[in-house]
Length: 313
Image (cartoon, rainbow, N blue to C red; front, side):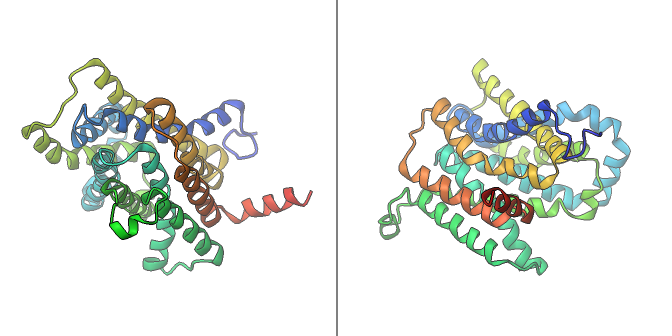
């Protein structure tokens, strides 16, 4: 029986599956950890330039298909780099100078809901009652996080710009995800595509990183700084991508998507343990509302049918 089918996962497959939310969450943890030591866009540039260098053997091995893709889809290639690595890279790291990793993770989780919303707005996709209710619940969770559980903030406009920056990044990632479904992108070998988009991101991030450098932006100047950057490159970028692709191949896209639902609690625990952030009551409300709403809106029908069978036993 093939290991590529959902019916034959091995122990190592489950281990990789469980590592996905940790690796994805590590981006915000490492990113929050380097804030103050390294300028945000310099951090993002080093992340994606480093990822590109590591991916060079793959890009060289598949150079013909890579060159053809860039030649025929130059604008799309650059837009993917701008959205996925620019906005969801340097802009996220800037936002982390204004907000916590816990808030950022919970808000960023809503990107899956924006995918549904944009499909409805621009592709004529209908929104079911379940999806609509789930989106509303998750939105209430985001509001609870942004207001830090204090409704009075609406009256005094005590909002955190970093929270809104992360919300903007969630929207950018939703657009990025929809663009990945275009035929020209979907036919590309996944690992080569990742290397190409990392390269595009490095190109997009070079000008703002150079500006930070010329205006006195902090650069890595210690072994610990480079260790954190290495963590972002190896774990939050390369390992996260590989493990998620492996989960999709072994378990199928629907089951692999469950790993994204695990990110909020995993990220907040990591932020408390590694960054010393405080766990507030509004974080618990955010976990329950955002995660619950996202699951309700995006979990496939098979998930609910399986859940109904279990509860009826």
